[in-house]
Image: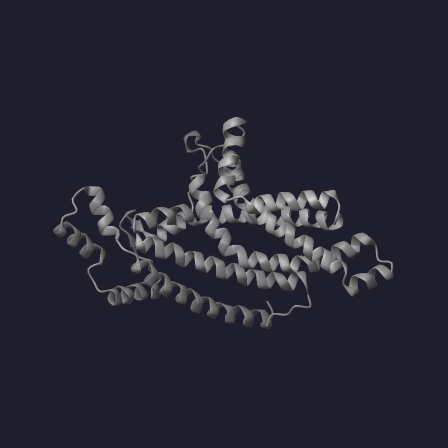
Length: 326
């Protein structure tokens, strides 16, 4: 690792801490402005919502303290990497996140990889046949995927591939009742992953396809490409080394911007497919008013987004050596 890269990572690491701290503060006050709390939810479920019972629950959860005091306690816990305790789940928030985070990262990674590879390939194909039937077909299909709500796409995929054709499982992450292990387990997880990853990836595939098409057409008209053609460089080499690598830069930029959107879309997808990830856990904690758990999930999500953007910056230098880390 060069000194420039080390300096850059150190600076971005400091920015990560400041950004995550700011997000944590905003999330804390936004969530506490909403009416209701975990004590009311638990008391309602128990059918014993008496004032004394509510007061006892609020004291147990620390909700009887003033909001500034709760904020001080929250910051003190963050300083010691303590995300608190989920009274609704009966576990430490950090343990719950560690259990669910791999499933969400697997879903996000599969969806982004599918969207980026397939979208870029379709964009290249559309650019090479610009103005012809193939270009029109690809653009129409991309627009259709972009305009279709994610949850509707997921339901339709379930109906077609799980109900009608019976090719893929309906939901979940694995067939727990079959007790698979080793290669059989990974194969089972892969089968469960196909539909949710495709559902989440199809929307972003449309974005990357349209963006890659526009970028390819723009780069093909640049002076350095015409110069390479005039020098007699092989078309395949021009396409790979000059056009494609430069056209990927705006696509990678969009990828960095959309990491947060992918994480947000995972909430819908995980709910539809009963995928045991952070998105589904956040959805449940929101309705249960489990603020400690929800704050922990939001904090973890912000860290994932910031780290992803740092990796995107590093990827720029690989795609285009002219770009230097500031």
